[in-house]
Length: 356
Ligand code: KG4
Ligand code: ZN
Image (spheres, rainbow, N blue to C red):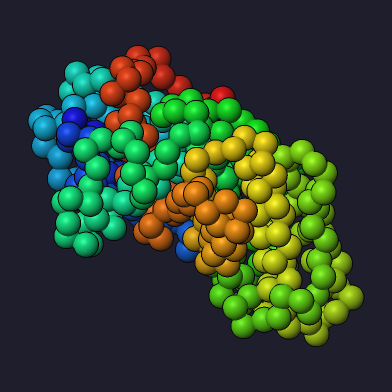
């Protein structure tokens, strides 16, 4: 089965063609146009600007992906229906509905967060292709193997809009264990970067500066680290950085970044380990834009190994950590395989779409 996948929930316009044949995912095309530079002028994503850019890029991208004008060879359309910015989501949703209706193809509505989680199922495809070894690829994406997650799987999703711990008992089955009560982890990176005069998106810039700094030089608070529950809060940490910068205008961006990053990583890792104790997963999945941070990946992987070496750890290939349509295609293929289709005449973008 081959899907055409569309993603426009935030500031990346992306179209992909992903197939699932004999249980093996293949990313045939995955083309993304980022608007980050445009939004950088405003210090963050402006929904109306995002929608205008999606509208300008979406048809050229569709053309570049090279699908036949009548949709020949495509079995279904998968589109991000939420969560995200309504004006932005609408561009992709309306294209998906139009193509599904005109081509008479089934339509799948994918939750953006589900897409991020499924990026780790695609990552072994990239790794296997790099190794040029077809034996490395499992006969089924659901089959137990070392490099794709097995169930129950605990997922830590850290993006610009979300920070959630989700338990997956099987494909498509999600239980929300905890979430942020205010800012998302990525949002905290972006806001702290802005305080230091670094351009949006701040995550990669903070990570880079942090590698040159001393993480023990400034001891920022670790909000809710000992709360015992699985919720997060990052707004207070951002305020602590602002207050520190006001009191220490001479502070080095490297040390502030390192101290801030260490506080975020400590909280994310501690909560994930608490969730591991509570749910005893076989695999742990890290995904979302912030999963690109090397320090977070390495720390979480090492701590999991310390507490239980049998737990498998999965993070997306770095080419798939940010928003992309390939991950929407992977989640969409699994939904299509379960026959979870929606009506192209009535589908609506849902900014608050929930996984569970
Ligand atoms: O998943 P994503 O691309 O979009 C949303 O669904 O929100 O995540 C974007 C977020 C931004 O806040 C960005 O600063 C952060 O991911 N991010 C990073 C890195 N790359 C992107 N955060 C930390 N380290 C990175 N290397
Ligand atoms: Zn995202």
